[in-house]
Length: 316
Ligand SMILES: Nc1ncnc2c1ncn2[C@@H]1O[C@H](COP(=O)(O)OP(=O)(O)OP(=O)(O)O)[C@@H](O)[C@H]1O
Image 1: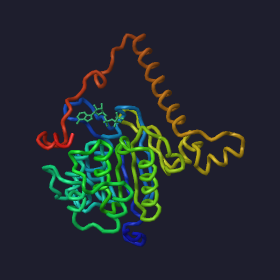
Image 2: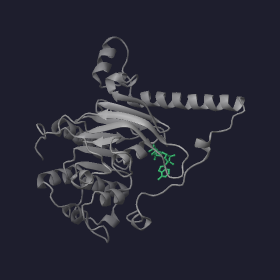
Image 3: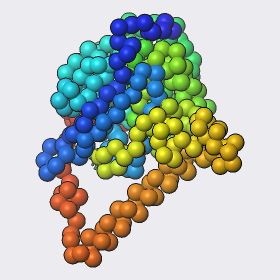
Image 4: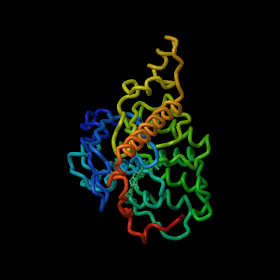
């Protein structure tokens, strides 16, 4: 494994710094991502939460540099990810999303992506990888190097995708619901690996998920999005509700004071229910006042794929 990066000139620079990020989809009348600010120090593990369509993937893709925003609005390790392609090409910034072909291609590893090749050929095709890190990942993700990609199940393909995305010792890792196909043991082992990576190497992790099992005590920060805005964010101890989650030091204090600590799932459920009730109340009030749905909610912009369509239909 790579030695600790402590002592480098960039240590004091946050892993991720967002300053009033706005972003509009093409053809939309107004910004979908609205004035989002967030600061994640090196070594933090932040859970990105929100209802379906809240904007988690959009935000992760912006941080990954897949869409252009002003260079000052998004900084990863102090650098603008859209303008500084070296961040991704060097592996310092790694993005793992649900479409593994897109992500592997985006990492710019130059691995052959056409044809029926084995997992080993893909994984060993990545240049400049520490052999002990590669061996540890293959073991952790329980990958059969001889199996051909086209014969793999979704979960097995996902493991290869994850391995490819983690081969280089990233400094910032963006995860978009990547553990969804993994079995429980695989998921928990991976979460533990991420914890070690942030504790030992100072890696910053931003992880969007709807699966909260095993995350109590794992997260250091939380970010809750609603309709393109950031509603709650910060270190867990500072976010109302999150501080009472099992496993946080604040929750331990609350437990001794008589208040039982909560499961993360129940805290998030409460936030989502409140959000839904508020939206329904507003719709009812608007209806009573004779107001229709706003243009923003009634006109949906055209979806434009990030990758050219000829690159999309592979492996799935
Ligand atoms: N390429 C695109 N062009 C136009 N609109 C888009 C595009 N990608 C996403 N959107 C819209 O942005 C909104 C947020 O989508 P996003 O995928 O970021 O949400 P999410 O919080 O990740 O949702 P989920 O939990 O369901 O994965 C949705 O209304 C979606 O339709």
